[in-house]
Image 1 (cartoon, rainbow, N blue to C red):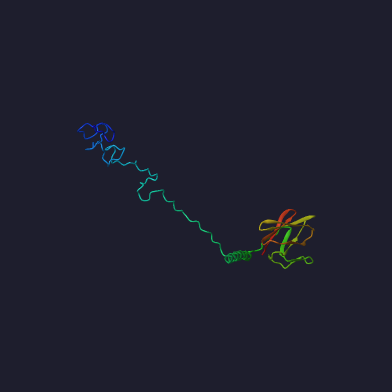
Image 2: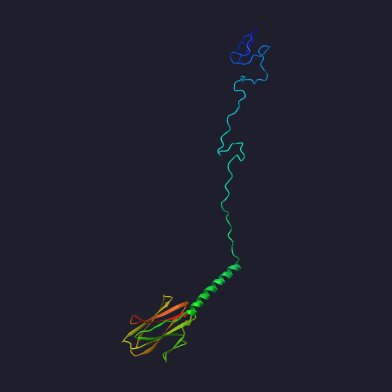
Length: 226
């Protein structure tokens, strides 16, 4: 009986050790029985012993799969950690406020110590004084002072000499160089006379009264309010 190749079925010539078609070895004895160790469908010698799978997938992170630490890189550590703002206890805040107010009061007190009244007179307004009152009988200032408390009434007493007919004297009040919207005007007699005008003071600091004779600034006086 003609021996057939157990792999491809081609006839085997007597004495052949392998199939001339597929190259499969010819089993000795029997009628084309194949080697039981061969896997069906795989010709012997064809890619035998090669890795049955392709190369490992490429690691997107540039690291071999078997390398320790394979996988996505760990998240970056935060640059800084937000800190919760600490609030001062109410007692500390009160102490700070008191110290600030005390310091401000000290500055004002120092300014009061160094305050010096400035007086300017002219050809017609010859004297200027400040005080707590005005004696219209004698024409003199009462309680003369250069320093007043806030809310006090300040009297400005002045003398006009050699006045022109229908002369007009106007007084303007300033606080630290800012106009206080308080103005007094008076018609002046031709003979020498004393005059007094009062101001209600509601702001602290250095004040100045300017006296204009017929619209010309001729005299001025400063005083301090604490």
